[in-house]
Image 1 (cartoon, rainbow, N blue to C red):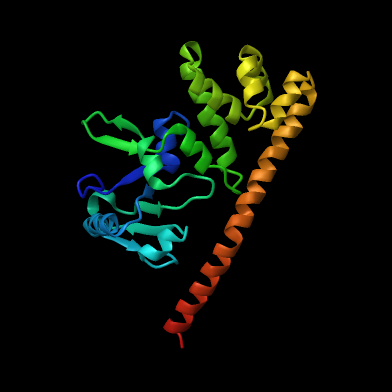
Image 2: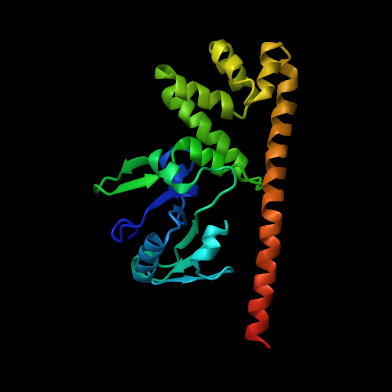
Length: 242
């Protein structure tokens, strides 16, 4: 439906993880969208066609997308009954939509439908949230990519693995095989120095600390947004029950 209405949107979330071989099934649809007036109109035309209603705060307004909130919808069209659609445009630590669009991946379904989705590296970055369930998914995404491409690895793949692998054993394997690249990436991921210094036993704890630091950054990012949502929810409730 999004392609029918020419919505500039990229699959992310569970369905994108399915395409990358890291999840079994996801009925919900998570989208990154271009937040401009023209695309917003097309998005709403698609939502009308899906008989989708906005089911949570904030309301269905472009201004909230631009400020980093997610908009949540439930579909009532017979062919998409009950499907939930979550839409975002601004995400912590993730490039703006036009850059994401340039790097997008495209996968063609058996019926010829083409699905644009976040590139794997952008999807992994978007998954670096405070939610505990996202971190095992990051691990599965990266390891699935390694399993698929290890025999024909090019430099971009290796750099991606060195930056994102979440398990000590696999990270040691890659950093040892590509020692020069690992040294180049030290400034981006300091814990790689533990491998070059042969302090492997410290690596699991360093990986855990790295995750906790990222989750805390995400919590701090969302703290004022959550407060704003609560104020907005309270304001709406008061207007309904004066």
